[in-house]
Image 1 (cartoon, helix red, strand yellow):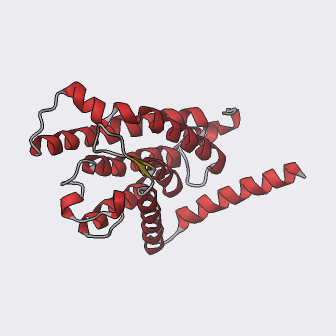
Image 2: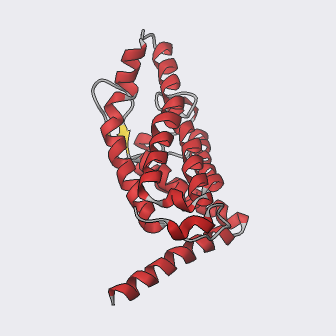
Image 3: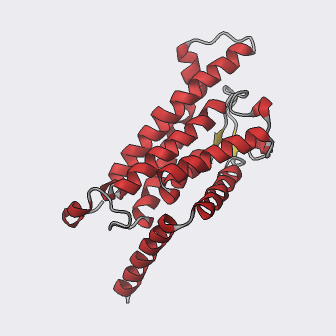
Length: 222
């Protein structure tokens, strides 16, 4: 019984990814917009710390899963939709905010939002192209890069400009203490959960001509 359920589950996850890959462009755009809405909801789950204007939110968790569920290009497009429509006035940034004053070019967290686009593309691209990347440890490492290198590479400079434009003098160590260090534990926790979900929901056989499909028979978990 358990074996039959597991086999049905594996077939279902393969069918979903194959279906998603075969969708028309308008339907993929709708799916990308839908996931941008999910990230907008996750942005409202936030914790403010007293020493930084950047809150801990559920956004990065949604960003990483968006890349996994939508793939590289469409995961990135979904986050671009999130950034663009939020800047244009759709109130789905943190605290139900929106508009140019709080959009990617104008608020403390704006650089992080831009980084979401490239982070989702990175994890989605490797997940689509390499079956081996769908295992826990490769995806965990990939998400670490996407989160701590890509997102923060955009987020920290924007935070610095925001602080300087508001008359604050900020050194590099202080910048890290405000925009990086407080979020390490939470980010690692979200990455562990996202990598585990990736391991569970992604098919371990090719649905899109993956470049390493001939080697998957020799792979073992995790």
